[in-house]
Amino acid sequence: QTGECLCKKISFRTTGPEINFAICHCDNCRRKTGTVFTANAWFQDTNFEFTSGSELLQQQYDALMDSWDIVNNWFCSNFGSLMLTKGYRMPGISIVPCGLFRGKQEWKPDYEQYRRSRTCLVECVESAKDESRYDGRPELHEFERVWGKSGKAP
Image (cartoon, rainbow, N blue to C red):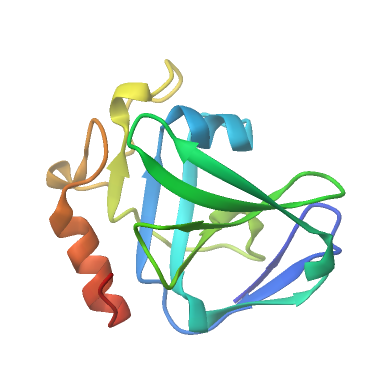
């Protein structure tokens, strides 16, 4: 699968299947994208690479105050598209916004997090399983599932 930023100067490729697909309603995700929630596909680092324009990436460090997580975000320095997120809690994982991919994807969320921060425009993400809807950060077993799929534990 391939994708690119809005100005099309930064492009990437993923290989292999995604190991997680998550919806997030937290304040920081909404602010860094300007949307009412984020939809992200997670890949092993070895299955993600920038194929052009990586010199145009601008890194931003984000300490998520609500969950005390620390993430690094990479944005296109031309138009500001969020290109990649990597979290300290999930080493070896590249988190990629789904809107960057070319073509139509058939992903369904593995979980939905920070539902307490949902805007009035979003009532429910239909395809998320009831047991995988979290008002805050997901439970540990969700991360253990991702670690198991990636073959790496923190």
